[in-house]
Length: 87
Image (cartoon, rainbow, N blue to C red; front, side, top):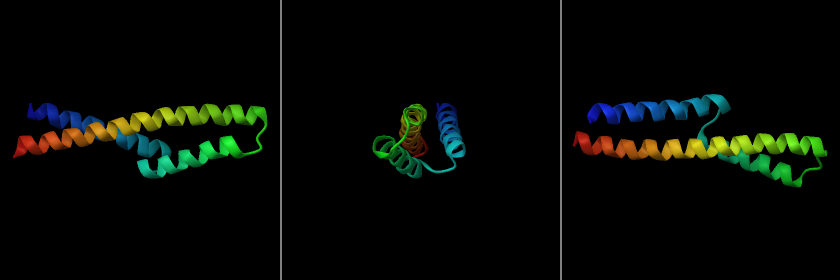
C-alpha cells in the first residue's frame, strides 16, 4: 500500500511539473495568464481569423488548466494519505 501511495504521488508530481515546464510558470501564474488571454479574446479588436486562433488556444489552455488543477488537488490528497500511513 505504501509503495502504491508513493508511486501515485510521484506520478502526479511529474504531471504538475510537466505543466510548469510547458507553460514556464506555476499554476497560479498560469491562471492569471489565462484570465488575461480570455479578457483579450473578449475585449480586443481582433480580426475574425485572429479571434478564432486565439479562441482555439484559450480553449486548449483551459483544458490544461482543468487537468493541472485536478492533478494538484489529487496530489494534495495523496500527500495527506501518505502522512496518515507514516503516522
